[in-house]
Length: 505
Ligand code: GLN
Image 1 (spheres, rainbow, N blue to C red):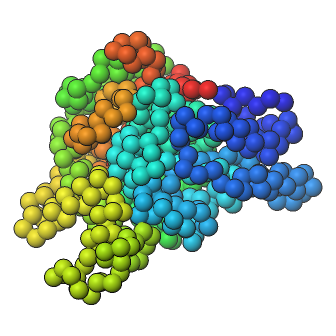
Image 2: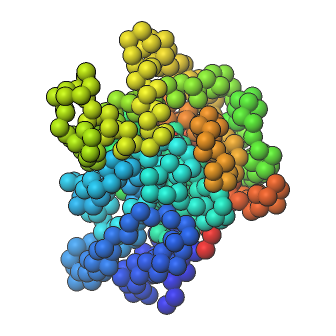
Image 3: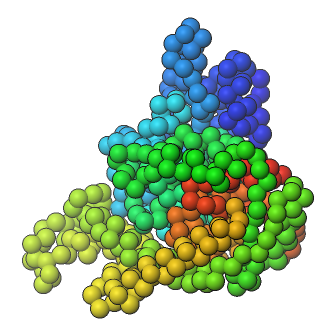
């Protein structure tokens, strides 16, 4: 049968694989063909793995074995998955889209990957991103920008732009991204996909190259909410390799989760005052108002909530981001990992032949190996962590982070879900914000709070722009945030909502 990549979901694909309508090899080949046709324009992938067909053959063998009473298949067996380039797959390059790690080969699987591998997922390739997960457009890749498949002159969002573009363009069925301040949700909004940033600790960070350890989470990018739920359930859970992971039991029995799971209509809070500060594009306002009306029609109760300190979330986020980035990236020094600049320094004066401090190797390697945004954050982060400024910036930002978390907890006394736009505007043009970091940072106004508070948040496709301002028919997402550990509420509301992925196929 011909495989309709546009409407395929995990459950549909599984049913076809079980029925023998097509094999995992045929499914993988359909995606490889689509990639050959579309990815030269989109550039979602940095590499297509050489063993895709072998992986798919192993999945087919598992289906055959199951029939004769052997190894069981799962919903994910034979399902093609694209993986962001900062998640380690044993034996594969994981470059974080940086020259620094261009040739770095992972020596182990990330826990999320290991869990998917056990189920027989077929890893198609690694997807492009902003270098070390810093940015909002995938333009900060050392290996060229990814384009938005809905409009090749626009960005797909970032930093998981490759993973979102791959799904929107039908170049994989599911994908993994990572989200530190919006990097799964904002590209999902721009590309018309579903993107979930799980509760902090729900998914192990073992094997995710750290950007900001207190904010990073791996999560799914898919076409449907049901697919996101399946993928999330496959990768979540306690892991002895990441002490910040939480076990499902710590929250699975809460009343809120039970309500959501039982299909009780939930209460949605909208922080209207805060949203007024956001400078929201009129088309995003319209789509948001329509989404609000759709939820009301479905029987959800809609109320206003206050998040009085959200206006400080961006500066707080960026101070914490810079501080932790500067510390996490210090390991990339040309000695321990990856790139090492040859030439003037060439490892010869590590002990101090030229410069007084004797660290030419570090200087030269880091100057050549990191892109502009990474260097900017390392410098600013080193500054906010320096003695004398540590209290004024870093400690104050952390104090404010607690206050913002208390605000959210207070709001969640009254509501089950908080709804905001995912991003203040639809996808912008390539180059439009590239030379203005602050305008790029403002993209994150609605997404960073979920990371600062650790709460789960999901972007779902809610509509498209009309032809205004040259932004014709671009996808627009809305963002749902829930209580700690209550992804169930997000899935329940997301599945109720009449949303459909916006395919660029
Ligand atoms: N745009 C945000 C930043 O640049 C988010 C990045 C992310 O989530 N990895 O920090």
